[in-house]
Image (cartoon, rainbow, N blue to C red; front, side, top):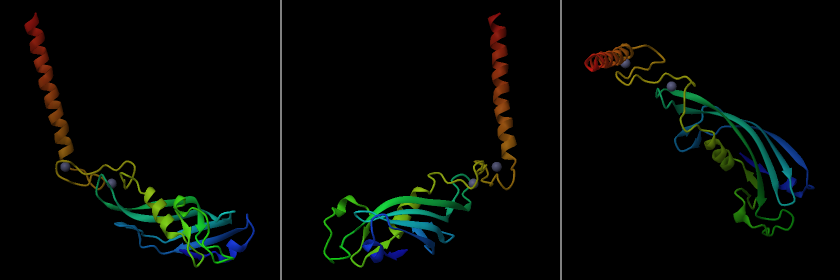
Length: 182
Ligand SMILES: [Zn+2]
Ligand SMILES: [Zn+2]
């Protein structure tokens, strides 16, 4: 996702360009596979120091549900605004005097602005901490391991029976203590 911004860097502050993005990025990060292209629009605005990028992108990642362990596709909305700073002045060819270390994203000496690092950084933030295939995912049965989204198992019924059995025994205990106290 590399854009040559030499012309925009020569333009007046406030000059705006909008581009469509339709790019393949097989991996968002290590272990995060994207199942769709990165699509959307980016707006570049010439600022007095560099270029402000407003990105509105969409893609989707392959995820494993944290409850049922099924693989599913999680849609991702990647939005960010970042100012990119040129390391070289487009007119003089000399290094710029902007403190680079205070900016996360730079425009290289060939006047190229690469969106990929920001897309990765902001994209990873969109990955849920506890991915769920659906908000009400029923998960796996803790006894037999069956995916409860797909079928019911007998364990649930048994577990309920056990709880009732405990409850009943408690009630009986209670009754007998009650009787004793009279
Ligand atoms: Zn699930
Ligand atoms: Zn079960």
